[in-house]
Length: 406
Length: 156
Image 1 (tube, each protein chain N blue to C red):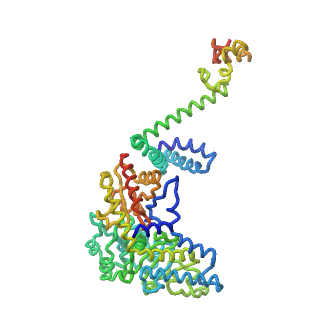
Image 2: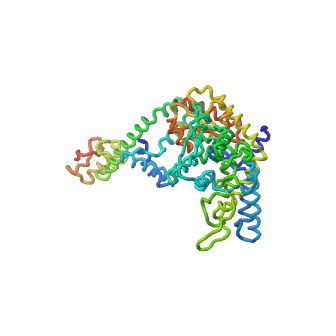
Image 3: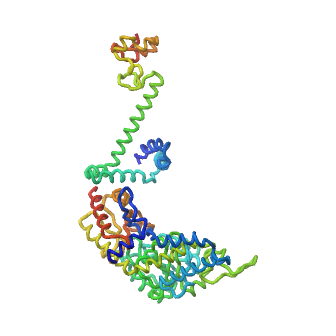
């Protein structure tokens, strides 16, 4: 991305164009929540100001406009991830809801196996722990190699005909590592298993084509891709969605009911129970359009470039250790680290106090990995396309100051 | 954790004037409550205070920032002792003021000692000791010494 383009892009984000205590804001917490451009805010405001009505129910002009905008948003999202048709796109609240929907709607039987990696977000761990008790399925965890990369050999050893689903994170929010999903999907399909990917950290940062990947389910959130919070997507192959029973039922999921029966609508409607987050759906469409204009290949390249700058410039802080693979390319836009003898929460709070540098600290909802590796937590800077090298320079400078406290 | 003891007192007072401090007072109270019930404090208040103070010092006084960061527990213990020490003297002073009319009957420096304040030697010569004017007698003993300073037990 050229500097001029980048400056233009930054202008779209009101949150980074403000000053707090006379200093600019450096937002490095994009793995948790990205910022929103004016275009997304405007699209949502338009809904509230011009046609704030229901879709799929009423017959008036406002309702028709919402129908039209909802269908447009669904088409954009299908295009965004390369889905075969719009009906494969289900609007959810977030990635968590998407993963839970599949966990609760797939027809699991006693003895079925679900395989996950060892660095799953709690959203892709707890559902399987619960279902392993309620439906008596077996949950298997594939441990990473020592260099924190995915162990395909161990994975293949865990595969057999009883594995109903391989549910894995695509890009880890822990260290930015992207799992070799093409190989994982191929191996899983060889054993007749389905594959679900948690793409919360990948879809916003790199080009994903669900058709090319041949993945069965994909879940991601709007708030990590410059979209509104409270909205997400579950992609599923249409024939699989048709076979699944809905997780939530009620308004707009049925075509007809009697006192003792109901007729479910076809996907995606049968999975979208109750009144939808229309402003959110429309805003998400605007966000996808915005990202497509920038180009996710450019986004990925830009983030790696900044991460490389940070990694190269912290080499003179001997007390700093990076979590994840050594190579920057394998960590994408995430820089997860610890400074010896300085608590990660202290690092995060001091960066915020000293220079308005906003990062995250803790266990990043991957408690299981930290517990297994006996690491208390980490500080994490996560980058996006609107972050600059100048910001990274200040970040490194402040890290050096903080590291001298030990 | 020790700092929560100081925080609960200070933030409770500040909380009278601002809702922002009421939240902090509640948080520090919870921490103190857990501490006295022998459970670990779940609040990050102490950590937040440490980071805030260290951040203020890191640029102008890096060595002091390092000292504060590394010895924060000790410093907070000292401040806790100081707070409770001064609280003890304050309560004792208020008690003395209420009972004896002076916050420290043994001292000549108590600013809340009306006798002492108005009892300069010239004033004393002209008007006599205020305690004598009140007709104070032993053993009620609020009296004046030779320097016309109101003290306990030297009336007359």
